[in-house]
Image: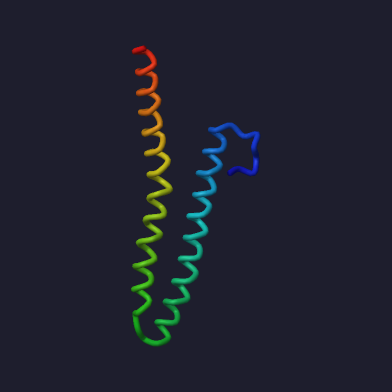
Length: 93
């Protein structure tokens, strides 16, 4: 999973988050570049067809961004709940 086997679990999780954030930035860069070129092509034709790929891809980019922001927080909440449940079960026995 990680190129650095000596990292702690927290460091590996942070590394995954940074890689995901960098992936989103790369996705955003390609989105801007490609859609700028499509807008120029559409403008040369005097048309506005570039809005369709812009909107469709924009939805995908927004979902990508939401997953970067929401998934780690959701994972942490679910993990904390599971640990609490496990701890309470152990204290009952």
